[in-house]
Amino acid sequence: MLKINRERFEELFTLLDKQGRLYLPVAKDGKTDYAAWSAGSAVDLAATVTAKSPKGLFFPQIENLMEFTRTGNKLALEARPLPVEKTIAFGVRACDLASFKLLDKVFLKEPVDEYYAARRANCTLIGLACSEPEETCFCHAFGIDLAEGEADVRTYQVGDELFWEAATPKGEELTAAVSGLLTEEASGAAKVAKAKTAVREVFQKMPLAGLKLSAEKCKAPNEIFADKAWEELSKTCIGCGTCTYVCPTCHCYDVRDHDGGERVERYRCWDSCLFSDFTNMSGGNPRTGRLERFRQRYMHKLIYFPDNNEGDFACVGCGRCLQKCPVSLNIVKVARALGVTENV
Amino acid sequence: MCDCQSKRDALVPQIAVITKIRQDTDDVRTFRVEKPTGGRCFDYLPGQCAIISVPGLGEAIFSITSSPTNKEALEFSIKRCGRLTDYLHGVEAGQQIAIRGPYGNSFPVEGELKNKNLLFIAGGIGLAPLHSVINYALDNRDGYGSLDVVYGARSTQDFVSYEELSQIWPDKPNVRVHLTIDRAEEGWEGHVGFVPKFVQDLAFSTDKTVLVCGPPIMIKLTLAALAAMGFGKEQIYTTLEMKMKCGIGKCGRCNIGSKYVCKDGPVFRCDELDELPDEY
Image (cartoon, rainbow over all chains, first blue to last red; front, top):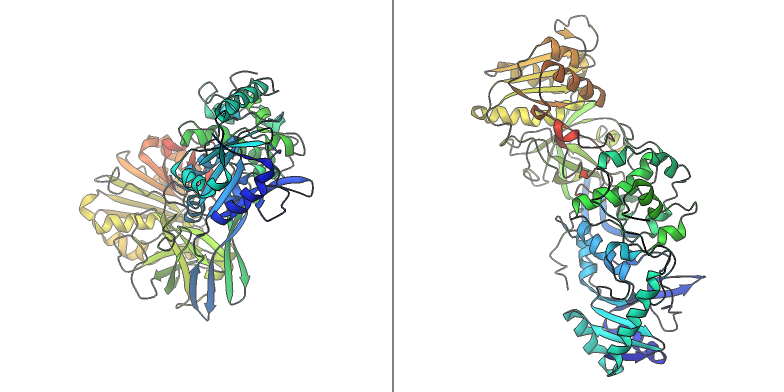
């Protein structure tokens, strides 16, 4: 198996960045998030879960879509060109890799979101197997293997060595481009296999290891919708939207205009179904209260999304909502209360 | 790599021009919209919607009022009820806007409605989507049985498309128009009262397929009246309205249950509505 030692990472990143703009987890101001790499970046491959998910690589928090020019009663329109930059995302964990497949189900469904599709097509994904899962992790509940993410290149950290394995033609192409830095190690496969077994064993002892979600075993959607538990569950929600912003699968967006006089920029930005004006229209608001909005978010993740997508939940068990919710609400709590879980 | 230069995202509209404006009532205007070079912006089916852009104010979704048999232009009957519609009510013919569509499903004019006797029940601006179906049926007259139009407005000044309602449609064979206003007015010899009760008074036979559109309370009470008259839910169609941004089932706003009103609706058969949570 191919490998590279830690002391040569800076060389690897330099070379990768020449193949395409390199994004990877970087520690800044006490937290780690995906950022564009530059020489001397505080790359943090120890963080299992970044503060925000990497969905912004394909679905940016804000992006300009088009510009209008007004001249008297005439209008001109120029669509922003689709992104052409080649990118590489390095260090992506199995849960986040799985989230891209769920986002694909939304954005690549006809009519295709061309901005998302272009970014996705232009990116080569380098996965990084987890070695230290966090207490909030539960990716296994969705059939995700923390030791084996679906990427173009899979990498495994064992001590100071990073093992490297191309998994797709795109990954092979990238591997060829950086092959000068990679060396072959005969015992690599055995070391990686051992590390995988070890981390899977560790994971089985984690607090959420027993959690299993089942769409089939739960009550009928209308029954869950009418469940009395929503009242208690939503009581403390302050509607801040943090869970939706850090969530790798939340994809609701707003389209807004910035009026600059003669020119108007139309942009798309993340939005949240937890915000009170999300469904507000001139004729009224069908989801007026906290309970209705809270319920919508979880019904969508646990019931509606699976209904439209071959049973797939809109969750990958990254645990960000467990870590970040200021009032300790999260999808695990909700799933348990509603009986969507098989056990625990 | 993507073939980026030749693709255009679905959120990017086309420029269009308002070529004619008709003041229907105090707060409803009907806009004729064409390509700047003339001609209709896109093909569509009755019941489908379009998203109109006013740069600086944003976008809003409207049902297309005209019938697809009108090949020259799109028409929209629009009530003044918010920032974007306020703006539209202030413009003159010649103003350019942007438009994208068509969005959503349609009334099944070539499916379940074919060869049926049709009963249209509308209240206020709710005539807008039904108007498209009525003219479609009239332009394909052999494909449909009798047409009954029940239409209620607040007053005689509030009828949308009054010329068609009073002079054009009633003169067509096998078409009846039943108008009602909320309160009696001097000079009005027609019916006075709310739509649901009027529908019951008219005692329609249950061989008809019904299309209902209007304010939520009117729809609710009309559905109850129809049920009392013996109409089955699978005989009745209505349209839902939700906040929308993308129109293509991605932005999440119009999600009700597992449906997105923008692509799975806006037209729903009433038995389908029963499966949705009561959040519309």
